[in-house]
Length: 136
Image (cartoon, rainbow, N blue to C red; front, side, top):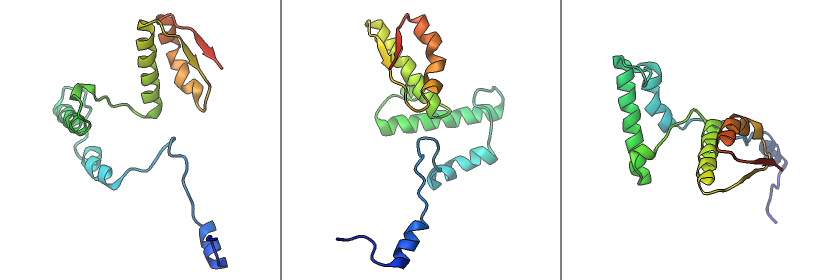
């Protein structure tokens, strides 16, 4: 029937820890860490700034954008970077709402975990495009 046959195996399994909150945060891969480390420790600069370090950082951001676009077979201008999942979700919902509004669609929102973190910043957008929000 399978399963754990011995007490030592069972004890070892109960000592194992599983991280199951990947939606909140996750570890950085070693490949990503190695690629980012120089930009976090030596070559840091605000990519929106006009000074040399900023321009260098901006060039690297654009290079990364082009590489990602190539891998995804899209245009570089179609790749956007956000600060995290909540911002990305919020942005996607805003774009969907705006696109739906252009063709007369209404939106129904069902509360889920963190719903108000996602929806609250959208109130001005829904008001601006005259949408009706119904919470289920």
